[in-house]
Image (cartoon, rainbow, N blue to C red; front, side, top):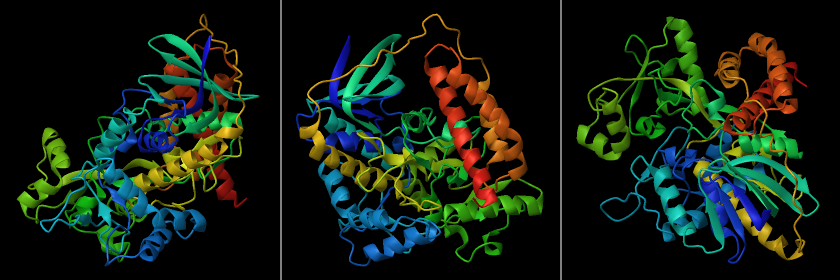
Length: 489
C-alpha cells in the first residue's frame, strides 16, 4: 500500500519550509525531516541574512559586486542578479510571517557587517538568526492543512516512475512507499563527510546522492568552503562556529605568538572573505609550525559583546572560555558547499519534475566561494522559484500515480562498521583548505572500491547504509572533480 502526493519535499530547513509555504493552497505536500525538526544547518546559522531592504545607503549593485568578488567572478550572472534584486521581497515576506530581526533604538533594523561586504546589510536576530527563521517558518507551515510533516523520517531511496517519483521512507522501523508528481530536494549540505565540520548531524549529502542516481547533473562539488573561525577543541566532530560577525564587530585574528598576521596575506585583514582567511591561517600555520590560532575581541566593551553575541558567549562559557576576557582558540573546518545538484534559475534539474534548492543545489550564485550570509537568502529566493514553477505545472500533471516496488532487504546484513570513519579521514587528508593532490590520487581508488561495494552490495536499508552510501558518493564526486580540475580538463 502506498500514498500519493502532488509534491514531496525532502528537508525541513529554510529551503524546504519556504518551498512548502509558497506552493499553492491545496497542493498535497509531504515534508520529510530526517531527524527532529530543529536539527538542520539553517538552525545553526548565526550571522544572518544579507539583503538590500529599506536601506538608502546601500544598493543592490553593491551587493551584487561583493558577491562576484567573493566568488572569484565565477558566479552565474543571471542567478546573482535574481538573488540580490529579489532579496527585499523575501526578507519582507518572512518578517510578515513573524521573523524578528534586531532593531536599533530609532526603530530601524540593525544591520551588521561581515567579511567581503562593503556595506552593513546583514539582518540578524542576535547571533541565532537561522534558528529564528527556522522556528517562524515551521510555525507557519504547521498551520497549512495541505502539508503533512513527517519528523524523524529517513529517505531511503527515490525512483523515477512513468507518473513522477516513488520514494521509500523509514520511520520507527516501519517502511512506507510514497509517490508524487514533483520532488524537491532540500536536504542541506555535506559537512558530515569530513572529520570536523560546523554542520548538523543530518548533513551527509543524501539529496545529492539520490539526485545523482536519478540522473541529475552534479556540479562544483569540489567547491567547499572552510570556515576560518570554528572553535578548536578537536574533541567533537561538530565544531562550534564563531560567527564571522564577531570579526565584523572588530575581533582580531592572532597566531601562536599572539600577533595579528592577516596583513601578510590580504589588505582586507580580518574582513577578507572566508576562503582567503582560511588559506591565510593554513599558510601561517606552515610558517610558524603551529596550528594554534585565536580570535580576540577582548578590546571591545564586554556588555556590548555579550548583548550582540549571547549564544556564542554562552556556548564558549560552557567550554571554559569568556569571550569578553579570553582569546578563543580557532581553526578552519568544513562549513559550506557552493556546488551541488545543478539547477536552472527556477531550481529545476534536468530530470523532469525534480527540483533542488538550498545548500544541496548549485544555482551558481556563490561562484568559487560564498559571500557571508548569502546562504539563507539563496534558500528563500530559489525555493520560492521552485514552488512557483511547480505551481505552473500542477494542472498538467497526470491524474494517476505509479508506485515502485522497493526491495526492503529485511534479511540482509548491516553495512560494515567503520566505512564512514574511513571516508571522513580520506577527505580530511586529501581535500582540506589547501588540497593535497598526491593524497587525492592515492585515495581515489579506495573510495571507488567502497562506493562499488555499497551500490552493488546487499545490505540492510537503514540510516547507516544510506549515510555510508551518501558519504561514499560525495567523496567520489569531490575527488574525481578535483583530479579533473588538476589536469585542467
